[in-house]
Image 1 (cartoon, each protein chain N blue to C red):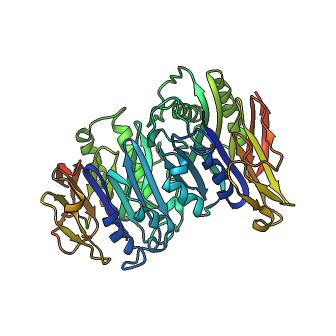
Image 2 (cartoon, rainbow over the protein chains, first blue to last red):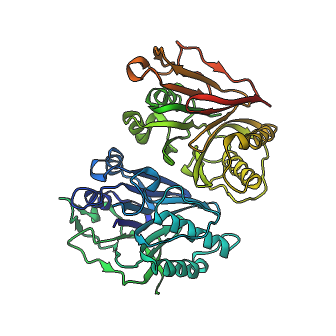
Image 3 (cartoon, rainbow over the protein chains, first blue to last red):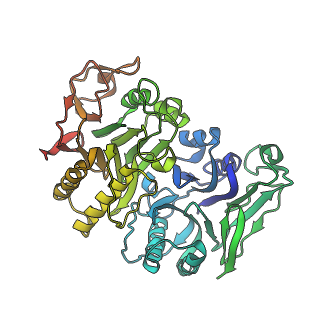
Length: 257
Length: 257
């Protein structure tokens, strides 16, 4: 299994605090030693940092922790390999361009005997996760000849996630930089921080941040993670089969398959 | 104008020395202040580091200089913007997946009034360079239904480069991780280092490396750059219209349009 991390915010926000907690689970407090990655949208561009090395030992992870990259939409992942060897091309998140946007995807779970038909997007590595991502994008391309609003896209995304979930465990995060789609197959949690902000204390590292000192009263910042990252705040748990579409930190649409 | 940097080697080799020289031209000894990027292949995976900030001031560039990433194929670029604003999505190199491989591209030059037909790959940013890359890949996809050897691909690559060169200046580097294709429209140089290795001294920084201490007798390492990076070695200059296909540090094919 792996762990997911997502962020959706209405102002460019750094994710150093949550990332620091997650990284501890990559070989420190957790068993996810088989690589990690994180993608930060910056306008339509995407900064992607990845390493097949355990995150607690990764030089690149230390850079990301030292260097507060601000973004409105972030997708991160730490990996404990089950399908596919440990190498860069098997490291989440995966990225493809569709309709002139960078689509970024990370998956937690495992699909059994998943052999989708060949489409336009081909996997580079040999994980079930990247095969599922390519299949999802191929289905989206097949359904729409050009860009559509996320709300129009949703039925296709939800249908594909519903089908993939039949083949195993399929918790995922997907974004095109404008919205962040999240699907819970078994386990996913979220928290939205807004004024009045208070302190937050990481479960996995001896670190407390007072968000009041780092935010303005209009900031809305949602963090999504496989398991709650803090132990002094109330996280909401997704129900199995539940999906939520986020934009600028707020829920745009949600439902249950 | 911009500057290109490429490497093709028969063993994973770090490019810290050449990168250090190039980075000085990004706002230090040169005017290329509008971002930089470098992609390192690792198996079929690609590590991409980019920053729209000037390379001499970039935190991410310092990481890349400190942290010797070893790769057989590298494409780098520093930018002085002419078309497209300074932002991450306009920063080279550009990457797309084709046939399950990461294709990476960087361009030096400028194309006038280039408006290619829409195809499968769309630009994310608004540079002429990314539009040219998408057009090139669309032409490759149109010519071949699935993967072909580089030698079969070559006539299409050369033809597209020849056509693009009619529209302005088009020096470029392109790789799928297996081979490195280089096309010279106006200016490009290369050097192949092999045993007996000697010292090399950067033009743009006070730095000399003794490659003998860092290599084995069988290593073959080719570096390609817009202008020679060292001042005590003999670089070969490409002729305008000349192209070379490199693999594992050696010339596989070359020609003149």
